[in-house]
Length: 334
Image 1 (cartoon, rainbow, N blue to C red):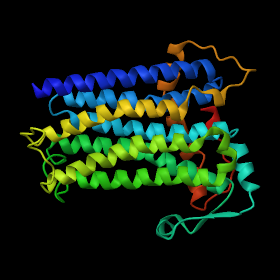
Image 2 (image 1 turned 180 degrees about the horizontal axis):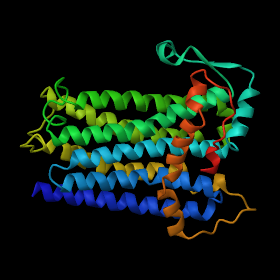
Image 3 (image 1 turned 120 degrees about the horizontal axis):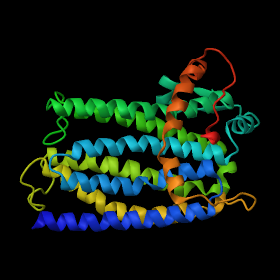
Image 4 (image 1 turned 90 degrees about the vertical axis):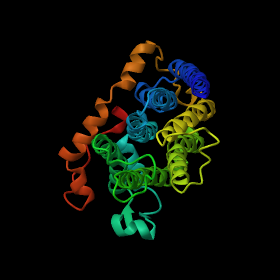
């Protein structure tokens, strides 16, 4: 009986988050006249209903939470990179951003001492810092699918160890979490550092609430799940209160909590992102079929092309001190 009640509650929350998000996307299609940025905004807004739906599937389908949790986390990488693409497009494109950076009063940006061990003590504003930001975000898009495949492989041979005591050193969960945490933290650090440099230019975009909403959905839910599993592993989680008879029930409980939280995040997302008025240009047409806009956002070919170009154009080598050719990829055209 409790299971069916939980399912019904989760389903109501999923439907609510989908309804709110679809209404907001419809408003974006009406007011957001920039097709390139509209695609990025739709991807970001879709994060909440997709999270809710995947959590509902994990709750409803027995022993499937690992699979859906991993897919959900892969979409985080898409959202973070789309957020970078959005703000680059808003600022006028890659070359314009590099030009503005090169004309800033400060010549360098400095990294915290701990990060300077790996990243160097400073990055020169302009092409060097832009590539650092871009590649620091792009690496998360690469790392997440790799750790997803690793998770599936370890789970298939019962070596992932998400349930029970997930922090055992002879199981893969703790190592996958460590890799994902480092990669995710670097991507967020690059975005925040970029905002610190370009905060004046991004002021009309109302960047702070959008970034906070993004971090809340990604970071809060990620660490909440890890925290619950940690409490469970040290027997501080009230499993009897929630009628958990098996270790696998913990994953389903986490999915239920996330389904409920996503309905609240959908409302928060509405206030953070609004209806797209800040992207409105009266000289541009905003009419485009709803389905075509959704399909354009669902097409992730631009991420693949950007990853491939970053390697083929030598951007990684230039960042590490190689050749000094000018970059050729423009995120505002994605």
